[in-house]
Length: 193
Image (cartoon, rainbow, N blue to C red):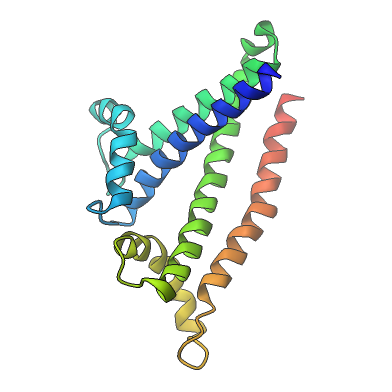
């Protein structure tokens, strides 16, 4: 019972930190504006981890590597903490377990990035009908338009109003989670056996 409660608390705390650090990387990569409630929250939640890493890993090639490494390190800590709840200490200290956790952290970040895409596209599509000029429009448009525009060129909105591109992006992201990412997850899991 206590283990379940600890696992829940770890999932909430680390989930929020990993997703916000990864979102910070994606927002900077896509040149999304940070002068909005989402950008400000992401900055406040991740500055403590990103700023010290920037001294060692400055931005390069237009990417904020410190944010991505922070997301990976937080994911690594998350998986290590969850593993520690169910694994003896001697097994935790083995090289195989450490390598598995490090590789699995990469797979989990790929899954998290796909979920960020799914949620951003869904919320952007929903808000485009309800509040197209709301405070989140800038950041959502910056995150989703690079994915939606190539599809819109091939499949324009039906009747000028019904845009299927968000649905297509969500379906492709879901398929990516089901096929290549699931295969990658199984491949990493087989390394530990």
